[in-house]
Image (cartoon, rainbow, N blue to C red; front, side, top):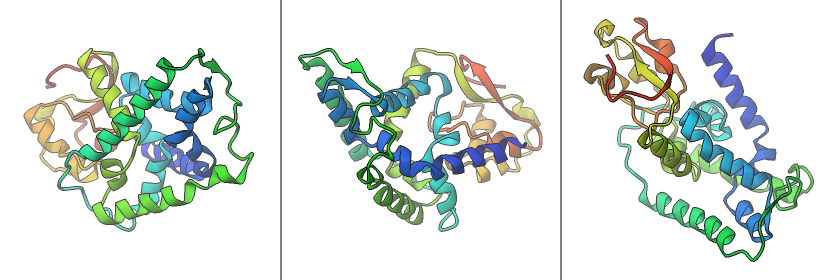
Length: 248
């Protein structure tokens, strides 16, 4: 099975079970659980996504995120590249407050949190009550609206509340030089400047420019491998290790 076919199948499968898993990725349940002195499945899910950034960078976004699967479907509405990728400071501030609240809840709690995966409040398998399904509908609507308004992966760029969280771990991993998965520029001299890599990038990165300047791809690369698989000269490849400042 080709890599991109497998990736799209995984994203669509993740989107198919999104009515069940959405509650584990929602902002409120982890805080509610920690207030109750419990580390349940919602807390574990958010923590796992954050920690994955150190090793796999943003591969979760490119391969497993249900929002990515939703945007794969919504791409028919507007698949234009994002031309202006501005930093959404409002979202960063909100997510920062969310993270601070979770940390503060643990610090100022009078009891040590205990692990209880089956604890209520998004701790159970989320088919146990109809209310667990309710966040699914507005989230999917918002994702479609963001794609329609902003283009390819518009929700990733402008709306996703997990984006700053995994972007933080990715940046921290790069800063402390944690061995991780990344797209490497193997041989820039072989590039024929066809720009297929740029046109096919799911995150609207100017990959061709990075190849020409030998500058590593930015931290918003989701390791989807579209540029690797569409390059006819094998200029790009997946690598695992400590990324060098420049590639040749």
